[in-house]
Image 1 (cartoon, rainbow, N blue to C red):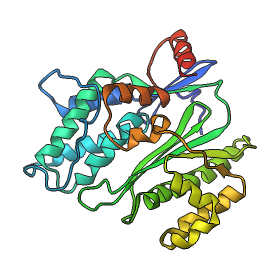
Image 2 (spheres, rainbow, N blue to C red):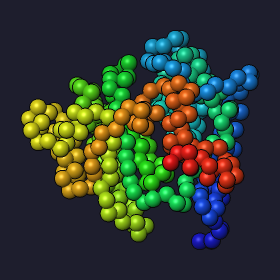
Image 3 (tube, helix red, strand yellow):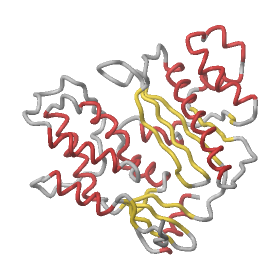
Image 4 (tube, one colour):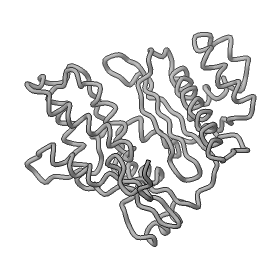
Length: 301
């Protein structure tokens, strides 16, 4: 083995550091991806997904040669390593890899036009961030037009820093919005336990329970009130898994308003103002000077 010093460029991820922060970006990778798409215009858009748009397997005409579609979407999947702002739409378009249609390719080009305007954006990690986990969980109930399966969405922070995020279709159909929310909460709870153990390996011991923010009050009440269990036998495993961790003090279940539910960013398309609001909350910034970051941190506080 050879010591190559501090990492600056690893697996196409650029790492910038100072005494007060880390910044992870895929700027060069993003520019290469934009070139791969070979768009002939110079248009840019403000959001990665058009407002109120839903896609299904039967949209439009099939692509004659889907090779480019698959290549671009595969690259976009890797770009979500540092770009959670495109995670939701990439989750959608990646479902059509086996049989993409022209309308799906139009959605891909829309993402590329969005990336043109913010290719230098990345994740910002301040060293002053506290070592307290807090988690946001949500579900897009029956959001898939083809299968009516719901989508799990969660994001996990340590202090202000975004550690983990997920936008993934649930393996089975949920019979109610409460059930879909509960499955999402169960997934987030498993992530919390894994992260707590990982942090312990680094010598970071969390003494306070992690708040698991859920916008569905019914789902939170099921976890904290055993009377509801008889009415929810179809979700009994997830129900008892969260309840055990709630009783052990590993998580709390506070309610969060829809405006502060950050997982809405991974659930649906947004207006320009909402998109920018959530993007800032997730600490997604352009690479800038130290003073610019400090001013943004003060605004977020």
